[in-house]
Image 1 (cartoon, rainbow, N blue to C red):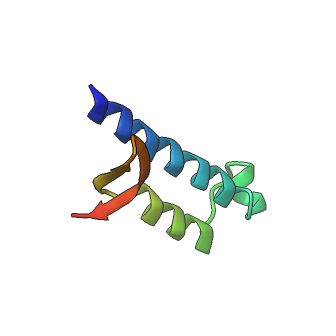
Image 2 (cartoon, rainbow, N blue to C red):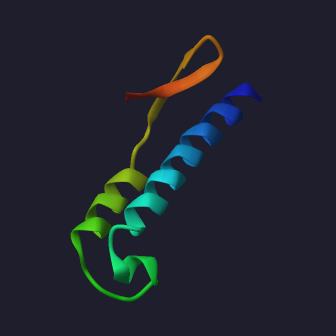
Image 3 (cartoon, one colour):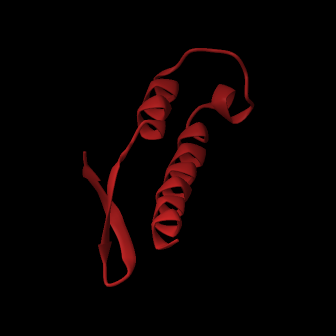
Length: 65
């Protein structure tokens, strides 16, 4: 149960980052078909995966698997 909560924190953090990244490009912000550097970075953020690091019951990031 607690493990699912931790992964939710990771996914929530990634979602916030992706939203901010999309704000850097007018086309991404308007969901237009195009190619830009922001999209490449977003793909890398989406792919972040690993072992969640918990300190004092707080999500502190990911240890790379």
